[in-house]
Image 1: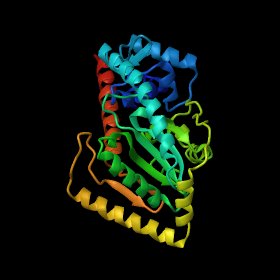
Image 2: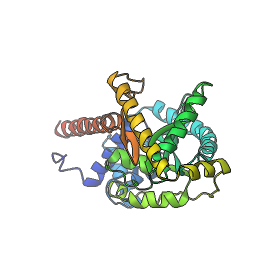
Image 3: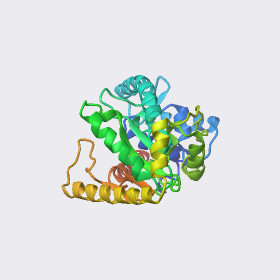
Image 4: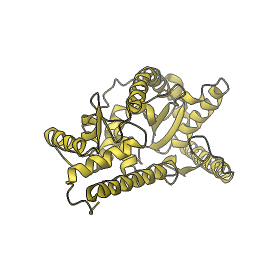
Length: 313
């Protein structure tokens, strides 16, 4: 990047942002680009830099959307995915509201591709869950049992848990453009107070996205069901803690056994590749997360190298 003295830092920042979203074949509006830049800038400064990059034929624009290649099919696909996502989000919010009744759930948000308003006909519904402190594994076990049950009827894709933490583990330890994007696009459905603490603990994302608008998480709170409160009362003691610890060890052994089989799904996920701790359950970062980060770095290097060759030709 230092080999491009003629390119100012704002242009480089735009390219860094756009190469990340280009991994997912996602053209961006100027507002989306600005929200995901890694340096502060005004709308006027951004407009000038975008115009210059288009003049240099590094960026292309179609119907208000910018992309790194002149391919109208990308925009068509994005708009179709956005439109379908709006329909899926209606259902996902209802499912999240239902899941919030489960024991020891303190907060739940829509995550994954759906939280970025992208969907296909076979999209999964991914959820990010915050559990009560020290009861994550009882909470997750209830989810696990329920998901096993609905899987018998072909509904598993509507109930995917991709990340679970408890109230004592709110700060996400992996700090990079991937995790910053995932946090910034979360759509909380339940647990306003809980998510206020979560976003406060993860203000580091604004080091990656200083122009990003504040994340909205206002929604009406509701009381837990009688059954949920009863289960919490039964387990909120020393015996419940021992059960929670035993469940953690059970899942750890189960996933270690699964991972040893090296079964890879169509999306590239290695079955069982989950990190297990008393206060968290999350995918190993060296799998999908690291794959995306490596692809981003590779795309940036290729594009900057192409710009250098073009400038000296």
